[in-house]
Every structure is written in C-alpha cells, then in structure tokens.
Image (tube, rainbow, N blue to C red; front, side, top):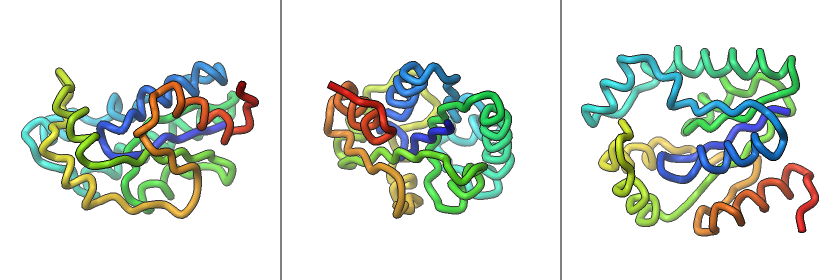
Length: 162
C-alpha cells in the first residue's frame, strides 16, 4: 500500500503520515528530508521553489515510492501542491491520497510556532497560491486533533476504528 499525505506546510503531514506508517507497519518518508542542499538554501532565504527546482526532488520521491511498492508499500508526507507534482508521485494506480486542508490563520499560527525548520511562515502565501485542490482522495480538515485526523484517515483507508 502506498499512501501520500499532502498539503501546504504546517498542516500536519509528518504527524499524520508517521501515524499511518505506524498503524500499517510501513516505512515513513518525509519529503522535506530529500530536498537537495540548493533547495533548502533557497527556501531558508525565503524564496519559494519553482517547478524546475522541484522536478529532481519529485523524481527521487517517485523512485522511493516505486521501490517500496515492491516490498509492501510506504507512507510519504509531501506538499505535492500541483496536480503535475501528484501525477509524478502516482507511481501506481492504487496510490491512496490524503489531502490536509485548513484555515490559513490556523496554519500560520502553527508555522510561527515552529523552531529550526527551513520553511519560513512568510512563504505560506506562496504555497496557498500554488495549491491546486485535487478532486480525489480524502480531504481532511486540520481543525480536528491529530488523533481525530488519524482515526478519520484510518477509517478512509479501510481500518475499522472504535
């Protein structure tokens, strides 16, 4: 099973993705950890990435998904803001998508509280401007607690919850 958790920065992709990985006993990958040094430096300086910056990174993530699909699956947390990016990550027809959505002010507050993260809160507007809402997958509102979000996601993925 391949599961991809998407959304703008600050929505809780890592929290939900790692929770799903644990529930399914699958490896978890945070796309942020696979950015090349140049991308991290650019974002650290407050500049959003462009499509050209993202393509090698997205291809590396697609390769990881393809490799792990052969051994049972994986969970990936990745912004995947545009449909073209999601198409690159759709290495199999049965990829399960969970899209985290929320109010800009809530996300802004979360980002301001982050420490030691290269993605700066001031770049949030560029992410919202880039976001192309998908017409598929689970759209999960982040106003729920992380535990509630995980329960909703598990139910969507077919795991009975109490």
